[in-house]
Length: 311
Image (tube, rainbow, N blue to C red; front, top):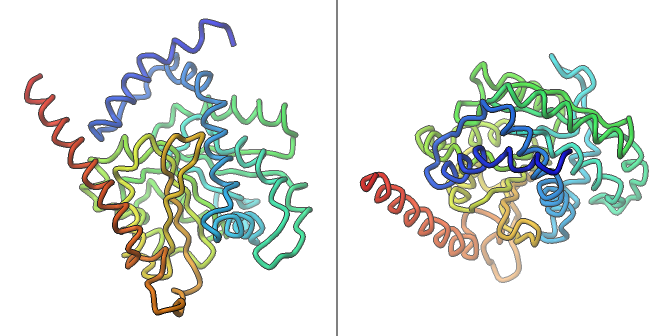
C-alpha cells in the first residue's frame, strides 16, 4: 500500500468510534474507507484474534480450539467442503490469517494426543457480514493470506445479521455451517456497533445459536468494549443452560477483555467444597465482573443521552 492509504479510513474510523459509543450501526458504504480500514488494522486485528485463540487460560480454551478445528465436517448448502470457522461480522476477513497463523501451533488435543497433522492442513473460513460491500476486501485478505502463508488457505463470503434470529433468512449460512459441523465462531468488533439492535432483540441470535449448538462449540468475542458481554453471555446461558462455560480473559494485544463461550457436554457435576461452577451462570467471579461491565454500560448510555440532548 501507499503511505497515504491508511488515512483514507479516517471517516470510517470516526464513524466506528461513534458507533461503539452509541451502539447504532455505522455505514460502510465508502470503498475508500473500507480499503483504508483494511490496511490500517490488518496487523493488529490479526494479532488480537490469534493471541486470544492461543491463550492457555481458561484451562478449557485451547483444548476447545483444537477440538473445534479437528471436528469432522460435512458440506451443506453453500459449504460443499465444510468450514473450520465462521466469522460473524467479518469485515475484511481478518480471522482467516489469524487462524492460519495459530493453527500450526496447536499440537495437543484435549485428550493429550499429538495432532501435528492439524497444523499441516489449510484453514477454510466462512466470512459473513451484513454489509455485502466487504466482499472485495475479504477477497484481498484471502489473496494476501494465500500468498504469504500458503495456497491451502481459503475463505468464502456471505451474508448474516446477528441482530436477527438465527432462523431468519439472512442467517441461513450460519445454520448451514452449524449443521455441517463447524464448531468455531468468531465475532470480532461487531457487537458494540450493533448494541441498540441487539438489546432490542434481547440477543436472540446468540441464545438460539447456543440452544442449537452441539457440545464442543466455541465462540470468541473480541470488542473495543466489554459493555455488552454480560447480556451476550446471559443469552448463551438461556440457550445452552449450565452447559455453557463463559470466561473473560484479558488479552494484552486487545488491551482489555475478550469473551469466550464454550458449549460443554454437560454442566460440571460439582467441584471440591460444593463451590459453584467457576465458569457458569452462578459464578461469583463472573457475577462481580459482569456487574462492573454493566455499570460501565449504564454510564456510557447516560453519556450518549447527554450528548444527544446537547446536540
